[in-house]
Image 1 (cartoon, rainbow, N blue to C red):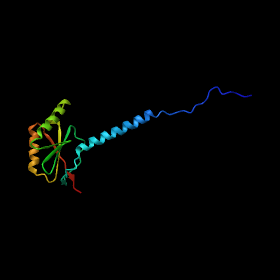
Image 2 (tube, rainbow, N blue to C red):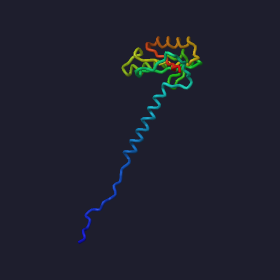
Image 3 (spheres, helix red, strand yellow):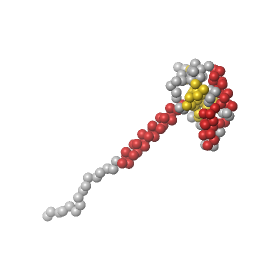
Image 4 (cartoon, rainbow, N blue to C red):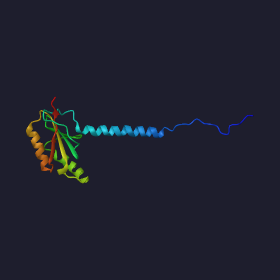
Length: 145
């Protein structure tokens, strides 16, 4: 006796759309993450070394990076200024902080000064930042080997 098959088995096809979408989202996430981590780096700055250098215990909140070059040029993100013309850039940062419910007093200015920058220029930079209301400063150095 011969039986007929009542249904025909089809090969199951896997829909890869959601898998491809997830892979693209991960790629974009890591690209954005890499770009944010480069904000605190500048190839033009050669940090001084110190025996007293120690890594930060925890990431600082409300961090604003200021890079001070050997030629006394100031770099903030993609902007370049002098110590004298830095105020508008800092006022923009203050506006962003206030939009987030913070103030200049709670912001951490992380200064990465080149090892050949004169100390007087660094003092002038800190003084101008204090005039705008910033109170917390961190100076970055390399740990001595």
